[in-house]
Image 1 (cartoon, one colour):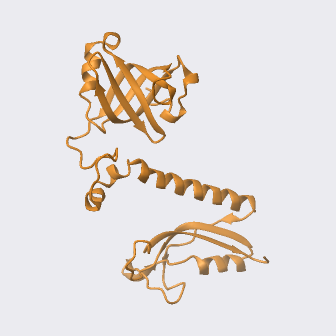
Image 2 (cartoon, helix red, strand yellow; image 1 turned 90 degrees about the horizontal axis):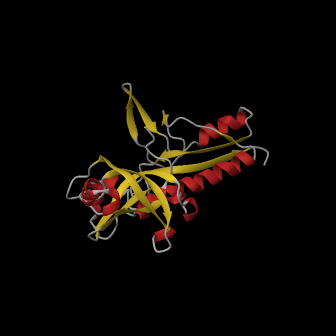
Image 3 (cartoon, rainbow, N blue to C red; image 1 turned 180 degrees about the horizontal axis):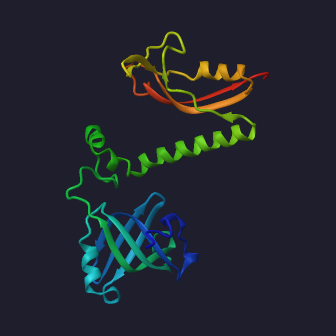
Length: 238
């Protein structure tokens, strides 16, 4: 069984007449009497599912009207070019399935129409990440790191992965996070610097690492991170 053939962002009016299968969250539903709309949201955007009662039948029409917001749904249907619809197309469904129904009420509103406190967002973090502005942060991070990796590879720089559990500090003046390592004291690494220098001595010449670092530093700002992603490069004879 095919659960998805396209993301919403892959569909254009040029696919008019094509059968597609979409899967995502029920963003919202609207009932206008003889016609209803289900807006499906996935990581690539929104798609409007248009249900005409006399075409889809009473059972499907009724079931879609009762779908709770943020339920996981799958829609099989035909793309129809429609200038009045968002993005110039709509989906005329032949099958709509609820794969996982969302509880009511929701802990927060992923559509961002209703604001909520930070504590609520953190308590229901998986729902909070569904918000477009939060999801975008992950996409931006991925795009930036992919571009950096492509550049480094293009410069013939080798990617390495160094240990994150160490026996001693790699940089002075920085507090460490101590951990128990099989009844011995160890620390979360604050920098790959020493390992990069070892690799230079080993003759690797050009290395980079993109990975986590940990610094147990006191702070009172939002921008000071105890855990962060570090981008480190070491090049000999440069």
